[in-house]
Image (cartoon, rainbow, N blue to C red; front, side):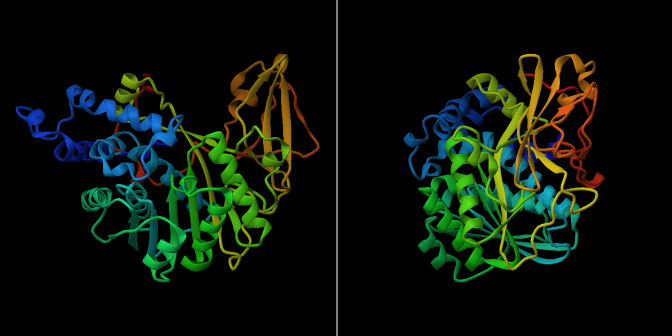
Length: 418
């Protein structure tokens, strides 16, 4: 369970939404910051419309949808915490790989920042893991009211040693280059942005521009996109083009620098992952009203680095340089008499492994104990697990380690069901 949302974060976010976006006539007679069922009912229609627009009906969303206050409040209630959690998960992966700065001033560019979920996630991560780091977060978005939200929330939720500057700009390569004025950053985050940048070629040019002109030599570009088939297949193509043209290396989630074997294998599959998280109460309530399910957070992502950096080491966790490390890139797939799973290895190959049903006497000691995203160690020549055989897990996707200071104070409890 990946649990990084402290109760105070959810409480302060809900209080801000109520004070800022709930009409005065609905707030009369109620506790100023307490978020009630009536408040949830009030905001739910806009949440449902925005959620539909982000998936099946995205073409119907206006280009600058955050100009509407209804959509800004819906984003804060329903998408802020998932984006925050995804960014925290990616940062923790990079922390475990020792790819993040450990001290000094760190410059972060949050592109398409909206209300600033990624910047606040960075502030919380570095405050938990590198207390001597001071962040300068530059949030750029085309929506000025959204940036006002980001400013207020950063002031309330981040720590005094971190700083946020905002800038209004259209999110095209030419406009951004004018706005950024040649500044370079240690970390650039583009969360839920790249898929809005046009064709695969346009997305590739966008990433190339950021890597070549706006990353420091040791900088990283983190791209997170919705885990939809088309958007993720496009992102996989962007990855391959950047590597093919020698424009960047990939740091995560791939364990290799070769063409994506999943993309080459067929036109159906897309490389995405699920975060098992402790879903916040407000999202459970909204899920119940609009018919969604947030038991898991789906995400597609890549972390890119300039070629001036040393080539990323293979594998994760204990040991480096092995050739039997694999990233699990599917969930267990039941078929007739067996269960299969897909692995993507350090050599840039896909391997399908299986275990017969009759050999799974205990699911906790079988293929079912492995999760999509885990890094495992497994012989390349072996394709079937024996009775109750276990695959050694090098790094658990949902069991990433973090210090006690970073753990929410909420007591443990059974997982809620919507």
